[in-house]
Structures are given as C-alpha cells and as structure tokens.
Image (cartoon, rainbow, N blue to C red; front, side):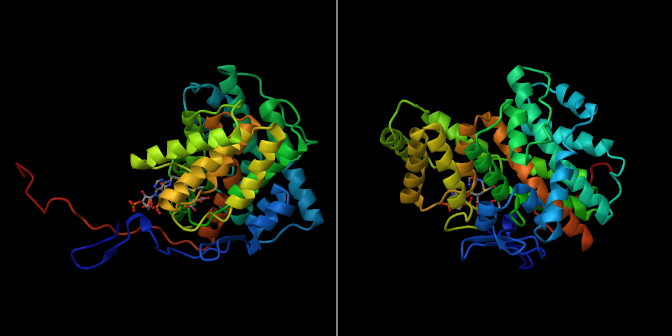
Length: 389
Ligand SMILES: CC(=O)SCCNC(=O)CCNC(=O)[C@H](O)C(C)(C)COP(=O)(O)OP(=O)(O)OC[C@H]1O[C@@H](n2cnc3c(N)ncnc32)[C@H](O)[C@@H]1OP(=O)(O)O
Ligand SMILES: O=C([O-])CC(=O)C(=O)O
C-alpha cells in the first residue's frame, strides 16, 4: 500500500520494491526463481558442499580450496566451547522465555566478553564471524537441553571428530544422528545461510551503518528474525500442523483431506497462514524444492507419511484458493520436527545458518559504509503552542 507525501514524494511502505544498496553476496532472482551465493546456484551448493565451505564462500567470495577447507574445518571444531559466563547468563533466564531471547542474550554476552569487540578491522570482523558461527550451535543445543531438563543442566560437550552438522545434532540429542538426518540438516543450513536484504540482514546493516560493532548488529538481527513474518514462520508452521493435529496412525490421504479443510476454513476467515508468501518471490521460493526433498527424505527415514499428507493438503488448498506458494520455512518446520527438535528451537536453527550471511553483510556494509537513515512524512498535529510557554 504505497502513498504520496503532500509535496508529491512517493512513499514505499515496508520499502517494498526499493533498491537501497548493492551487494555482491547473493542474488535473489524472482523472474528466474533462482538464488545465487557469490555467483553459485544454491541448489548446486546444497547438493555438493559442506556447510563449512558455504560459510567460507559467503565471507570471502570464493569456495575454499582443499587447504582452506581443512583450515576452516579445524577452526570451526576448535572454537565451539563457550565461556562459563555465557552459560551462566542463559541459566539465569527462565525456561518460559523464548529460545530466541536466550540466544539473543548469549550473543550479547559473547560480544561483551570479546576483547576485540570494538575492533572492526576486516581481520577482526572475520574472526568474530567465524567464532560466532562455531559457538552458536553450542548455545542452541544447550538451550534445547536446558528446556528439556526444566532448567540448568550439564551440556553435552562438542566432539572434534564430528563435522558441523553431526556435532550440532550430537550436542542436542546426545547420540550420533543417522547420515540421512545429518545430510538433511546440512542442506537446511546451506539454504538458510543467506538471502540478500531480508529484514534481519537489513537490520544488521542498519546497525553496522552507525559504526556499531558486529555483535550488536547480530543481536539486532536476531530480534528481527524472531517475528513470524520472517524467521519465526518456521515455528509458526509447526503450530499450524499441531492445530490441525499430527496423527501418526492416519493415512497420507486422510491427513491431506483434514489439512485442506483446515486451510479452506482459515482462508475463509481471512487468516494469514505462516510459511506461505514472500516479499520478493511471487511464483515460489527458489529454495523450496531442495528443502522439500530433504523433508521427503526425513519422512521416508522416520516413516511418517501423514506429515506429507498435512504438507500437501495445506499447500494445495492455498494454491487453489489464492495461488500463494510456500516459502522456505514451510518445508523446514516439519523437517526439524521430524529430526526431534522442539518447535520453539526452529528459529534458533535459522540463526545458526544465517549468522554466515548476516556477518558477511556486516563486513560488506562496513567496507563501503553510508549511514542508513531514510526520511519520513510527518502526519502529526501542525505546530501549536505549549500551554504556559
Ligand atoms: C524465510 C522467510 O523469512 S520467508 C517469509 C516467512 N514469513 C511467512 O511465512 C509469513 C506469512 N507470509 C506473509 O505474511 C507475507 O507473504 C510476507 C510478509 C512474507 C510477504 O508479504 P508482502 O510482500 O508484504 O505481501 P502482503 O503481506 O501484502 O500480501 C499480499 C497479499 O497476499 C496475501 N497473503 C500473503 N501471504 C499470505 C499468507 N501467508 N496467508 C494468507 N494470505 C497471504 C495478503 O493477505 C495480501 O492479500 P490482499 O492483497 O488481499 O490484502
Ligand atoms: O528474503 C526475505 O525477505 C526473507 C527470506 O526468505 C529469508 O530471509 O531467507
């Protein structure tokens, strides 16, 4: 819904359609329904690359060669531990708080503890990015365990013999995940890693543009990601599935019929259903086919065809009624559910992936900074006297 100011300037609400800057990090192309990270098609990266290589690509602009990848893997594995103050801060929070609040707090503490927090040189920023990416799985896995334990608990220590995805699942569940599960998890990380000027990345760039520090930018970005119109949608998708009812004894067709009826009713009530629609993609999210394949693999692995019934029922009814397509959060939610994560942990998993994109944007913004400060059209009262002045 755009408007005009009194002197004819156009107002683009929500910055809809406004190009605010350039970026060399990723290209979202709704015309061809494609997404490139540094020029590489993301489905091809998801099919072939470890998440460790994609992180390196986003930060440096190039895929690592064998030596660089070995070094990236070594760095990630040796920077997973948390300072005791981080766990103490998390333990001081009630488990009734949302895990996004706990992760946001942990990042804030990590920033406060970092002796290089105010050093924004490219070398210091890259090191901060790599450390945050290595530490966030430890934070998130601990938050999952703390919630399940009902309060402070012993974390499961990271294992240096496991890669990023294997170790993430190990620290969360205390057992080695099946290779199919590890691969689906890795794919989700690659797909969630980066998406140009989305709301959370833009938030990180706005904060950086004031010459604030990287941890502050990431803390703000987490706040932006939490909302259900953005990353919070993956959690909201699962709440929809729960509201419809997940019945493992049910056939795929029965589940599909119930989901279709639920969606028809929701749309008749003019509800917004999370996991559908996108500001940029209007003909489908480029990442959904790859994530759907990963979800299908989990459905087959855990033998849960009723989840596919719910998925297809909602998608079909939305398409028939409004032609609105699913976004990445739609297949990601049920995938994380099947892997065993609590629903409230889904958006923190998005953080673990997007930390790579956010920090790449912080570095790009800083390298060619301009304070981000748009204008507004004033609609309050005309000038008037203060009583008694
Ligand atoms: C990884 C990500 O962050 S992807 C995004 C995750 N967010 C969600 O899934 C939340 C649900 N989706 C939405 O709210 C929207 O599609 C957004 C916010 C993502 C994009 O929205 P915008 O580009 O601002 O479009 P807007 O919200 O104006 O929608 C345009 C029309 O489609 C409808 N629409 C869009 N999405 C949905 C939806 N999920 N359910 C029902 N109707 C929808 C709107 O009601 C509107 O209809 P109208 O013109 O009759 O009023
Ligand atoms: O691009 C957006 O607006 C939201 C999105 O899909 C993402 O951040 O991955």
